[in-house]
Length: 284
Image 1 (cartoon, rainbow, N blue to C red):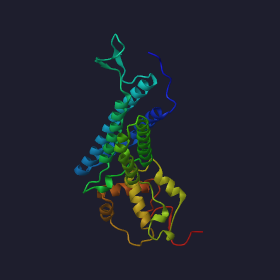
Image 2 (cartoon, rainbow, N blue to C red):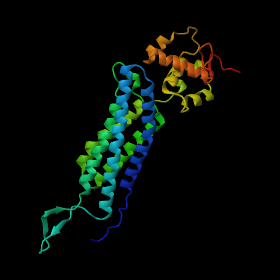
Image 3 (cartoon, helix red, strand yellow):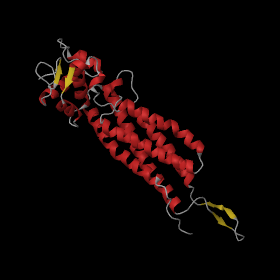
Image 4 (cartoon, rainbow, N blue to C red):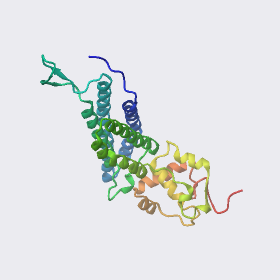
């Protein structure tokens, strides 16, 4: 067998690199969810978080399988192996011994598994009726990378399928690309821009506070409670923590713990307002 040179394009290696990135970046989200499940006392809420952990775990297992599949496809193509038959004495194809590898079929299967990973992650972040606020990324920066890299990997695989004239397969997986973009927009929420809040022209937020809220040491409950307090900067009435919990869809004990932590790290004043949030005229 004559050894064939590697293809000019770099689509499959790119797809594998992107999937390795997905696998690596999933770790932060998995750990955050595991930690959250261990600290959550409400049974139903803990069950939802555990389901999310299971989905992330399943996605990781499938990614392992996809990387191996694409490595096989790449190796077959580099070696020029593509359904060769053995030959009879007259040089004709001899089918009883079957044929060698079929890169196109394995590539199509890999695309199907990427599709499955996308929808497994979608299942993880499907809002529940009682706890819709849980359907968001705990590590939004890493999850943006996960979903963007998964989309890039599928685009590369689809480009290879198109090069193999498998147009139907490309059409089949195009909706998955859109699904990944929509999922990223929905679950990877970060601290919103100041202009997104009502009456924001009267609220000034210091750079130090923004940085603190985006710090990895701040949990999602503390961040949500702080954002809730920001949106109500300047209000004279201090609402009971049970009302805050109801609006944010958290247990009251979680809100109490979040407020305590914000105070311990120096973000929250004794009067319940945040350091670095100013209401009214720009401070001198």
